[in-house]
Length: 404
Image (cartoon, rainbow, N blue to C red; front, side, top):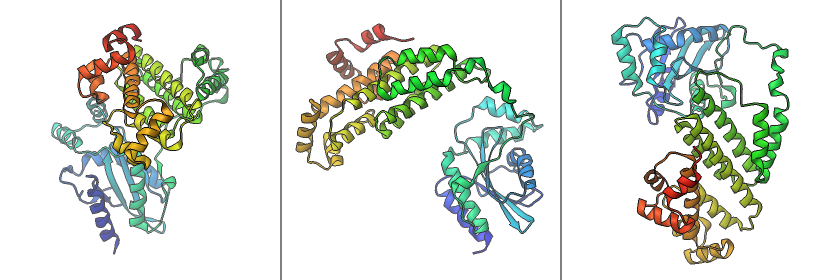
């Protein structure tokens, strides 16, 4: 196949998974072939030109032959690969755009305000945004490797691919300014805190307070205190999940909890709510490490417990758990109770109640939302199960333990 046939085949493969247009440019950055997408822009693909022309020109001047990813000011990600004939650039092939996360309307509008665009073109761009796919960054790196191979026949790995770095004026920071009195001792205090998490030490709050007394988090200013609080909380969450893994918690459990709490953090509407979500996640991770330190379960039953934790928001059946462990349902139920001291159904219910406690005390989710989140089936069943386990109704528990 010639290069045009290879690119057409690649385009068809991509469209099986994502509606991601592939465009080809000549060295002057004029569109050489139309985009293969029913929602593609007309008017010389204005969005492509205002997003990519300047960074691509700078990259080509560097004479690099590898494909690159470009994140533009609208929050879109593009893949660019290059066809060279010795030292002569023959063409540029652009795949995209995609989101790695949904960009807000205001952010897009602010980006477009930098350009003198007609109302009709603006309207067309916003309509086009409705069809842009959200694709994980790691998959975009894989697409870049595949596109480069179609063009050059050269095999690369995703480690060979980079984002184009945006140039900044006077980006270097004098070494002296990197040494701040505010940061002295932070690393040592942070290590003490992390070690306590690894050990499941209930006195971890003392170490955290010590760390906070030295620094209130990373120094950055996004002009939004809530956004800064959320970003700092996500840093803390990442440290906790890794420390918990080192403390014996299953990586699958730790990463699943990481995703869950990250979503809760992003949904927080105030700094106080963000802070209390952090308190809930810290307590959760430390409790799980403590459980692992005292864990004498067999591998099969431990795996079953981990599976229950990861899928606690789904409907779980004893039959499915037994099948996963490779046991009959009767033998699995008997072995599970023998090792844990409770039936499978009771263990699942207790885990749901434990999660419910964290959500009641650390979030503003309604009782109905928590019931639905944990697949109790109905609010009345959730309330009766919770009261039987704790001696309090969900609303009473929240009133006594609320953290915001």
